[in-house]
Image 1 (cartoon, one colour):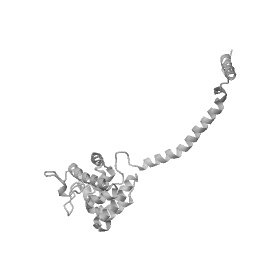
Image 2: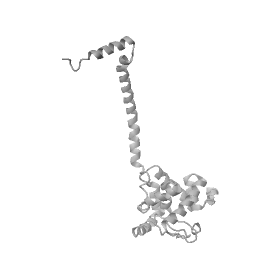
Image 3: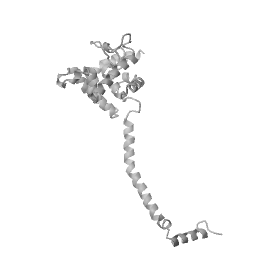
Image 4: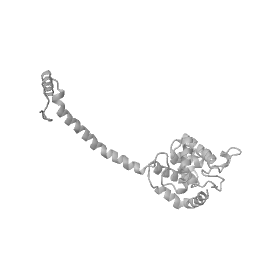
Length: 228
């Protein structure tokens, strides 16, 4: 009986034929397989740190189609709407959330002394006759529509945020001629948005804004949102 580990007569004949014909595939296979295994091992060792970094980054980044987790609960309340409104305008939802955070902290009935209204603090002259200024969808269409125009005009998010507050034409002047409110708005907004774009779980700049002026705005928004 032939052993299971002994080469068959046919296989031995094939080997002899291959050597006689000068075929190198049989003779070179062992070193070739070792080299191939070495390449695979090197590739694996190189890829492990990269993949680990990618996993670590993904743990800090907001999920696709979401806003950064550090925005206040009152703004998080509008997350699904912010994503939908932003998609309709071709905007980053984190940029829209930054505007909402600073403007109203998610209070749909916010009203400024200057007459700006709603979630995005839109001035009355941006609405068409008969539109409900405080209605969230209408307010978002008008507010984010102007934000889109600002971004198209200035390209850079910080300048677009300044234009949202000070007017597209207003911020065309040198920055030292801007109102202090517009300069502050740009400083707060571009830093908060940068934190959101980087996928950070916390924003020190947002906490500074809350401590400076935003906490009372968000307290009022919390009452309004809870009453929905």
